[in-house]
Image (cartoon, rainbow over all chains, first blue to last red; front, side, top):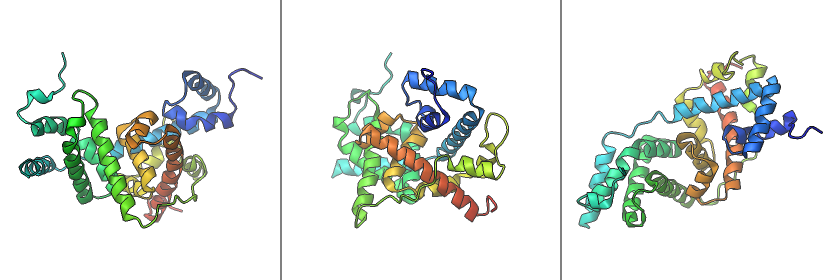
Length: 82
Length: 197
């Protein structure tokens, strides 16, 4: 058995955590090594990464209404008076 | 030099509180909007969370992470209100997609792009509204985790702290939430004719 070698199934089971940088440094390295030698898993990884990055970019494109801070200030002032 | 505002710099606790809230308001609103699903409810949620946070402001330590502190109040307020509104606890449908559902669909339909982003052809068809609606398909506990993950890019540990749940719960909800979200995105895209059968 090759020490540290991951089969595709094992690499894909770790892919979410790898994407999210939630693996230990050793595990992170094992997945990275697999992705270097396996074009199929590398393509899946790039797909998932591209998808999450795109969703992230789109979900944050929201701005608070300009009047919200004033409304909050007003509510807090009313609390002070109560 | 420490540029963090301290209560003593301000003429009132309200001024100190607002100085902390103002820089994070857009992000807090974005979280509220993705949780609540519409502008009116998001605005109410942020405002109610602000009142609750202000009442507890003396428990906040100046110079620590106000955004995480406020987000915790906001998300838990959302969850508590939603849970109270439900007659019985929401059960999560196990009708989840298989792993890498969108990748498989894109591959089957020869929609994988060449180059560094194989998802590009698919993501070009998915707009913000579709993503927002797919997020609303998630059960509330999963939506809370996914929202913090997507908008704030918090680590699993940070999300666990904010929601006061074990880190394994965050990992599991994110993993399952990803699958539900991918399936919802695909179904909504097909329903709306963004992707043809």
